[in-house]
Amino acid sequence: MDEKKIDENILQQLTKLEEKYEAMGQDLSSYLDGLLYSDYLTYWDYIHLDTLLSLQTPRTAIPDEKIFILYHQVTELYFRMILNEMEQAVFTDPIGEKTFLKRLKRVNRYLDHLIDSFDVMTDGMDQDQFLAFRMALLPASGFQSGQYRKLEIYSTDFKNLVNKDKRDELKNEQDLAKLYEFLYWKAGATELASGKKTLTLRQFEAKYSKEFIELAVQVSECNLLSKYHNHYEGNNEVIQELKKLDQKANVDWPLQHLKSATRYLQRDPNVIKASGGTNWQKYLPPRRQRIIFYPELWTSEEIEEWGQKFKKVFTSLHA
Image 1 (cartoon, rainbow, N blue to C red):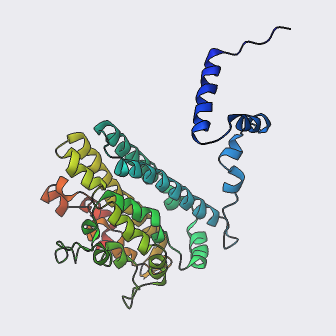
Image 2 (cartoon, rainbow, N blue to C red):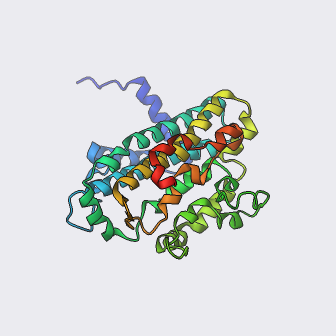
């Protein structure tokens, strides 16, 4: 019986594999033995499908709570994809213009998907069901998304995330830990009556404050804003992608939340306190916060009118 001739390409690959494992002090033949006995990979095992579908654990028996959980999990997975692109854009040095633009475009594409998908929250749940199960989830709130705060930190300097009432006072402050105490979102998690920090905020700070400050220090000279100033100032393609990111993250995304909150929580003359006690009427409207990652890329008129074109839609909240 003739011996089967081994393809030359396979022999070359085996040689490369042998060199790879020798460099690590490993025996290639042992790994090949493992390959002989290992099972073929399946789709459901690769993405841990059974585990993924087991992660929805409602606190009530109300059917639409599962939609609420699933959508927030999907959102966090999109944030993970966005951060994957941002990490590569920020920590790759040098990074070419083509690659940098590719990362920004991917981020914007993911944000588009998130913004377009928010109808699941706005129209995908029965209002009475939502109000019934939401009170069982306190003090948890989507406000506590640490990944979204990281998105902001990768995008810009802390000074651009400071509460607008403190922005002029702290414009020359270099201590990031001090600036952190005045970030805009903290004002959105205060008790409506007393102005004290909600339990929602206290939990969030206890879990993430150290991590956020350390990340801000780590990227202070390489965040997307710094990358622009150091490498791409005046580049029109980069400017357009950064402005799209600014618009999507700081106008379109919070407005989707505002639309949903208005539908489910605003029942004149009462405001239902079902969002961890967060002061969402002041926190969500972009024109109130005026958070802009890249203010130098916008005209003074555009900054003054930030989020204003939606004013009529939410007149009752902006009054």
